[in-house]
Image (cartoon, rainbow, N blue to C red; front, side, top):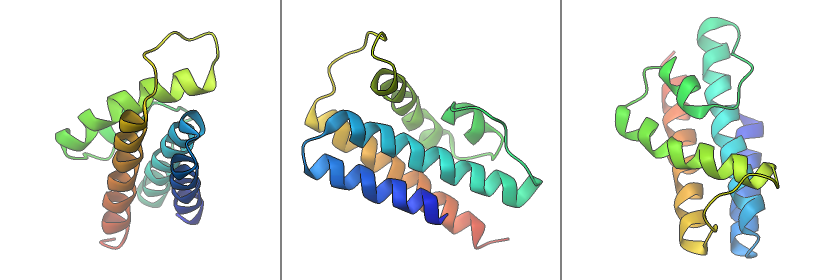
Length: 115
């Protein structure tokens, strides 16, 4: 979880500095790393995928949280691959996506402490 928290801090730092694509990239990385940490904790391994919805589905996360990860998946792909067409990443959108990552990390931390 240390790496997930570091990615989240990096996302927040980039967001504050107006670097929106890096903020979104690290927000997704924070969520992905946290999801995989819980999967490894529970099952001993995690799928090699970047798809947050797929990973969250294996953990029985609340549907509302899983739905919030869909735009984070899309924005991550656009931030990572320059040939992917997507809507412009505005400060408002980036802020929402970083908040989604915060919620995912918090949910994972809460559930790690239960086991």
